[in-house]
Image (cartoon, rainbow, N blue to C red; front, side):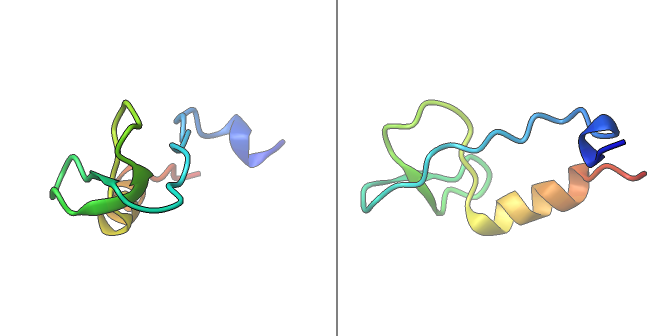
Length: 59
C-alpha cells in the first residue's frame, strides 16, 4: 500500500514563475513563487507550509 492510498487531498501545485511579476498569496497578500498570470489559489511559502501542516493526513 502506498502513501497515496491514505490521503485523498489533491496537492496540485501551480507552475513556478521564472521572475516577476509574482501572484499575491490569497491569505496574507505577500508575493508567492508563482506567476501573476496563474488562475487559482496561490500561497506564499509560509502560508503553504502552514496549510500543509493544518491539512496533513494522519495515518
